[in-house]
Length: 278
Ligand code: ADP
Image: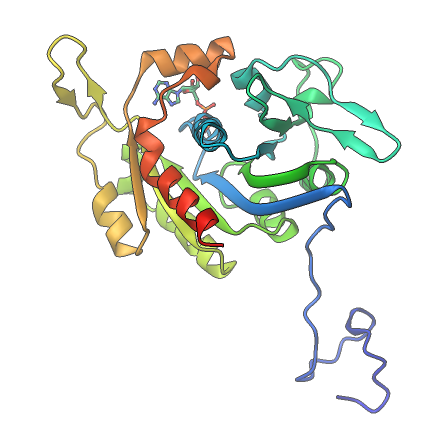
C-alpha cells in the first residue's frame, strides 16, 4: 500500500495487495428485500427461456413463496404476455411498482413501460444494461423469496453486464436438444464459472414429444445428451420439458399460471430445500 493511500481505490490505478475490487453491483431499492436471485439463461433466443422462467415462478408461487420475475430480456420481452398482464407499470415518488399477475407474482418488464408494446426496442448495449439495473434499483419489490431473471440470450456483452450488475445466486441453463451437442451450453457453463455463480440446473426444453394416443416418446430433435452434460459439469438438477402444444397455447393466451409444473419439479424441489435450510 502506498503511503499516500486514502483508501479510495476507484481514484487510484495502483495494483497493490490491498486493492479493493470495485463492485459493479447495482444497489437494491430501499423497499426491496430479496432473498434469492436466480438467472435463467440460454445460448440463443427461441429455446424457451421465458417459458421456463415463467414455469419456475408459477411452481414456487404455488409452493407459497413470494415470487417475482425481472424481465431482463429487454429487447425481446415476453414475460407480461405469458402471464396475461397488459396494464402499464405505476410509479410513485419512491419508485416503480411491479405489476401483479393473477396469482400474485410480481413482474417488471420493458413492455410494462413502453407506451406501445409493439414498438421495437432499438437500444444499444449500455442503455439495455442500464434499464436492467433500474429494474433492480428503482422497483419497489418488497419482500421476495425467489426472484427469477429472464436473462438476455447469449454470452455477449449485455448478459455479462447484467450478471455483474445483479447479485445472482445461481443460474439455470435452458437449452434445446440440438444445442447440447454443440458448444453453446459449455459456453454458458464457462461464463457462470468465470462469474463464480453456481449452475443450479440444466433444463432441456422441447426434449421429446409424447404421443397422446399411445404415450410413446419421440425424441424429435435427436437423442438427448443432457444427462452426460449435467454429469460432466456437476450440475445438480436436470429437467426435461416435452414439446407440449398446450404449454405454447397457455403462453400465447397469457394463462401460464394454469400450467402443470411437473417437468421442472426436480429444480423446484431443490429451490424449496435451499429455502428451508436457511
Ligand atoms: P426464449 O425466451 O428462449 O426466446 P420463449 O420462451 O419465448 O423462448 O419460447 C419460444 C416459443 O416456443 C414460444 O412461442 C413458446 O410458447 C414456445 N415453446 C417453448 N417451449 C415450448 C414447449 N416445451 N412446448 C411447446 N412450445 C414451446
